[in-house]
Image 1: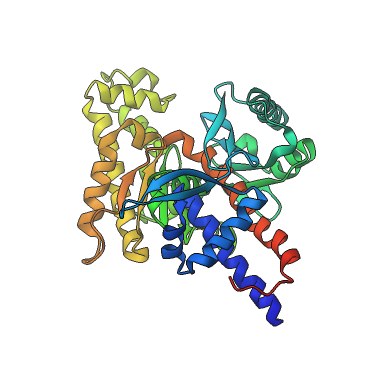
Image 2: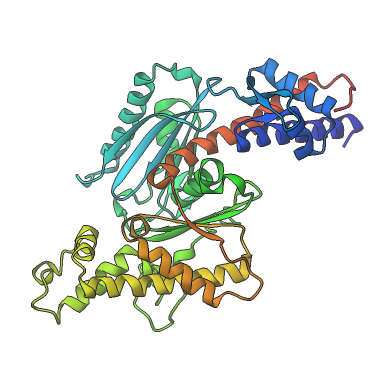
Length: 413
Ligand SMILES: [Zn+2]
């Protein structure tokens, strides 16, 4: 590598660090950036000028410093371009238009209750929602940088295909990336749903202060997303984070994946429904007995409200297994933060409490006490994360694409 090339790479690394810090913190002063990146005040000043000239950042309000002076703060120029985030879930697909600071400008919820008959109906519904949020926000279509999609796994990331999502079989082998790119004409990023949620938590949620985090989705299925050093960890074959299929009990119930006693077969919404249905066979006087073969998760939450001990004990048992699984995760990865979300966490707060107590009791000594928390973004984390995937790629590419052209000068940054 030539000397000049190395210098360009180093400068671009610094530019990305500055942009990354401003994005992660929402706003930054020159002094704050200098302290965070280790670059000189002058170097920071120069990078900020370049980024401002490009329109990527802008000066915001003055911030009072601790020595009483006022300092300029810099923020991402939110209206420079826009992103679209799509989050596909068994119950609803959400489509949002976001600015470059990750704010949701418009969001559209497409109910999945009607159980789509075919893939093309489903794709049309998403495309119509995208057109709608763009039109309502009065944004030019050419200002959309791309579309991030979080879809149920497993995903073939290389080819942009949804493979065989166990809880949404009508999506089997849908080449969503290609279909959408052809119709909309901008870049589509297809990621596993839990990776998108984890990224949303990292940029705008509970994980805002963290550089590493794990998100665990405790929904009808169980999934997870792993963020390390601000990047989504997809693994060598893009299947990292299949947390739902770690074995809890080798003789346990059969899982959708074909193995026995997976976490998903013991702690997910589907597992709760299966166990409840089985137990109801012996409980002819239980109010859910007549419905035992066609239970839905709402039935479970309604029974919890009525203090039904059968349902509560099944949920608590599920949470207990989840705690065991999380203790293993803590012992292997020693993560900064584990965020739990999903339908069981949102609707049954004791699930989190039990899982946390069990995880704490089983983790090795020395591991941090309070690594677990509940997602506050909830259902919006998925669209925010999907939009941030587009924004992240945009900022990284822009730095690399724009600056080599200007790199003839030898000034030190
Ligand atoms: Zn499994």
